[in-house]
Image (cartoon, rainbow, N blue to C red; front, side):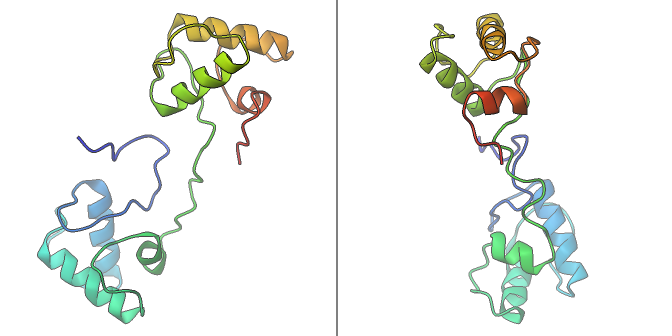
Length: 157
């Protein structure tokens, strides 16, 4: 399983032959708009899509590697910096993943969290967030937003 569809992912994922999904469909639309034929818009990065990418890269004086990275996306007119990489996603009970691991680690360092750093935002994590928020005179809602991340010393932008 590739984790290609995490919230807050770049609008410009690296795509290559064998990739598939909505990002490939987006790529195919952009190639057609630029006057290149990727075959049918099926969300599958096959040989025709690769050939179209290489032809497009050649037309833009990019490295013709058939791999769609930031430079190729940008050349296709995609703004790769929106949405910005959100270093401070809003977390609440039920959240999980790397951002929760980071949160738990920061709370643990400060002595608010004693549970496992497991990436799962459960009641223990919520209680730790609330006591941390209280110590920082923040609204004690148990929801980790920009203010709580900033208080934890994270540079959100």
